[in-house]
Image (cartoon, rainbow, N blue to C red; front, side, top):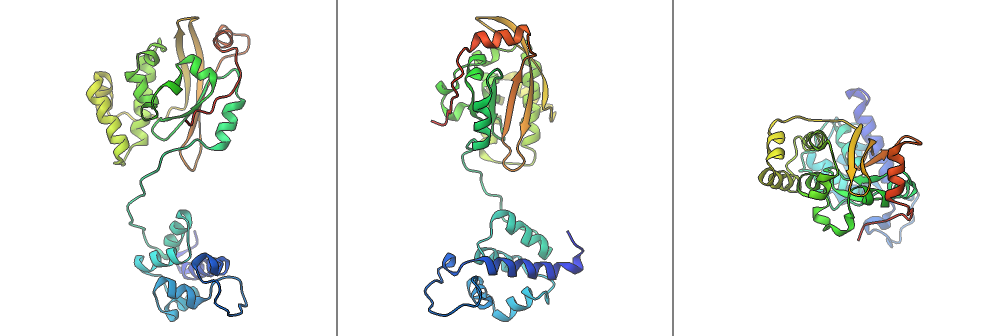
Length: 285
């Protein structure tokens, strides 16, 4: 970011660039019958849409004003059809803080790129997780290692919830306490400072139903561990060990948890015995 003395000019350039690139039809101004020298909006049209004077907007765009009030910035963001990132940048340029309450996130959907990567994994169980460990997608081998997630109602497909409350998932870990505490710490870190009803409901439900969760959540331990080793067992194969790592996206907080076994190992043999099938699964039903 440039110094504060440069911000008025940068703010003006930002407004001009978006005004010039916004087609009149996008704001319902097509069919005016007037010839246009540029394809975008005129200054007076932006001012009219934002319900401010043309003179004020002109001075703002020309860098002759130090900034604008949050109310004006909000109106300009709407007039110029700015996205969330662009709106945030507009406020930064004006030296203001956007005090709107954060939007409640909608239902998470697996990213197409992650789904493709998931489908291409063969000897590695893998699960796509949402920001609070909701299970968004998985490959067939993950279902064989843990359970058929498609049989679990979507509202209950949360890895933390199932780790504590689903006997089948819980029973797959011979070192359950260590893995469970890592997951509790991870959600503690992810939920810091947030009061979303979904995460509050999850924490409250687990606190009431499981004494281990209640104890560990009260310890307020935050964990950012993204790799380790799982000691697992399966009724058909007995114990085996897998390495795990979590790959995170930067923009929407989705994660790909991948479990691997060394080449030629007993654990790799277990995985191949568990799932001779290689047909990928997209579980968004």
